[in-house]
Length: 439
Length: 177
Figure 1 (cartoon, rainbow over the protein chains, first blue to last red):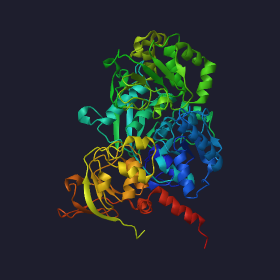
Figure 2: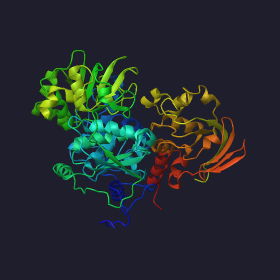
Figure 3: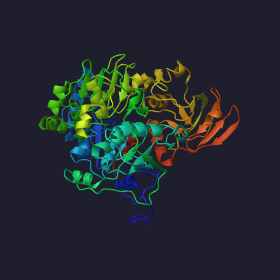
Figure 4: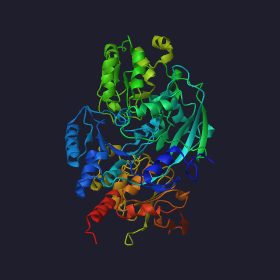
């Protein structure tokens, strides 16, 4: 019997759901109504939610103090509609009485800065309109995407959640030098895509929580957040890492409220248990089309690029920026290549200035956009032209994700993208001078 | 809830496996434009795969789909389906697509094993979404499928998330007895 007050062993996410729902335990398939610690809504969907509620005469929110409005999808207002939307959102924040309103140029990426500011801590549960809220599994929290039904959460303070099943992914071995969390993420996406006959995990990840276990000390918070990204693209409803002591200390240092980290019981029930040895993995890219099109970088090394972008909720933490900077220090972006850097938070932008990263990026010839989603949010800034080739750390690379439908969009780690921007072609980060200086 | 029409009687409109929401159900441009007006969406339902669908579709008709129907958890196509009065019976759909259909008030059954082998486009179907009973009148086939979970039936019966909120708000403001 597990050392737990629960009659049946539960996973960490089940415990978080039970705690927020005010019940002793939950089981997969049950419908619960969790009361979230807070609610996040982004700039792109405030209009629809506000209009829906206004039309019903619902002008007061269940708890405006719990609502966090973030501006990350359209920070630069590149068209008239975006300007109007910004004005609408400011009015909505006033009318709703939302004090935690992060307007354009404040806060940054809604799936990044709430962790840095201590709003999200281990054990936190919140609702979000956007599916990449799963990022917070990296810190040991759980967030649930409700899409347009965020209106019900705003009005009533909760919404229904069907308790998801959990798949446990046990990591064995350590990543080699020059191979990073994003590389592993693409590899995992590929395994999630295919059946066991085709070398994949052979499981259905739709609406499952992917819980990482095993040799996790090698992954810092940024790496864990990165690893939450691709399973989400494969339709996981959540990703979870048991928080390390280091991550609990990080959260304690900035926590906005007391918190209790949650861990899975030894007798928790999993739909499947998978082992994955990561020790032989090479640097990966996702070939154009989808993040699960993972391939060894060596298979496309030398492909000429026009466009490179480092950022997005998949690689927008401070450590990602620092990693990219280590490959750009004293280097120049290759002629004919545009390199965009998009920090995950305004806090990171200010730290870039203090710690010299801004100088590295600017002197290398990159340009730095305000914190947010950058090109990854339905292609509003820094787009690609027909026939161009891009390599980026975006979360997705479906045709037309940021610009022309016939552009080729590759994905790679921040190190790969930085090294490729310098060489002007897709480059294994282990083959550049900066790598040897780092290791 | 008793007056709500849980049984749909109409023609079958059969689709294959892996029909995505963007493109397969409704053009992606309407999704990215966040178009939510049913009257603007209806003329474009299944436009890219079956032009003129909206002119033939009648209230009560049932979309029968294979595995993995409606990938991409967006609401736009379901808004149009609900406004016309269509139902969905499918072999499987991503959970968030299922959630989106319920949130739009669409009568939907999922996990209906091999249902695409029991009917063809044009067959006369009768489906009770509250009990899971599926009848193909044209071929005299009767099947039982998992019904819509009881706790979610209320959302569909009220016309989806907005209808549910409307009723909730009325209850909040009702005079206390």
